[in-house]
Image (tube, rainbow, N blue to C red):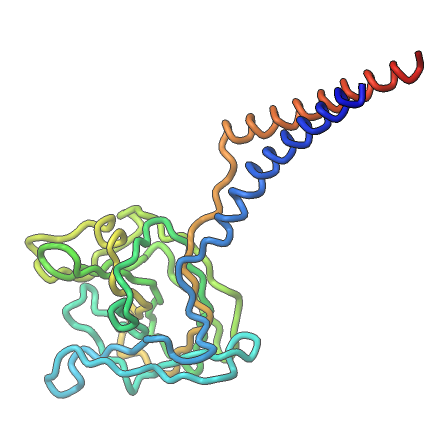
Length: 265
């Protein structure tokens, strides 16, 4: 009798363990799957500001952002740029200011797959006069024939707080061209799709678009993270979990009643 009870309880425990692994293990791993983090607690981590022509007929001038060791979210480190370093990028359509920019090669990294990844960040303005502009995330890839192509995520204009760190901005980089705008293609005769750019993204950042004149002021960033969505359990997963739990409960009940009836004899 004892062997029967032990066997039934062991089987039930195994079933419950499998259910726990399915329900919590898989989702837990997904929640922790953060692909990239810029917390800026040690340095500027590669970020720069883009000046299209350097003001003197040059081309592709990049200035380092300013890194501060404190003053960010929770008094952490953060980075900032201002109108002394950015300039209107006139080949963009419409004209854009690439206020924050990073290339993966600057930090020794390869191209990223940003399709349907989550992005969160804190942005702040100090005496930032947007001149009617909106702020967008953008992605660029140089990995395809025809050269670089940039897409702005125009479906998600970003609100920032003036003079203080506001709420964290968080959104999914949906792989849907109707939500984006291709602002630049090195070879207009061979434009590259959004799916291609996001799948092999080697540069990204934030831009001002739609201004009446050059944007002025200070623009700050902290705690940027790019990860993946947390998956919801699918129908089959939910059914499997429910079945395992019901099976374990039935085994417990059978073992208990068998043991109780023996004890009463």
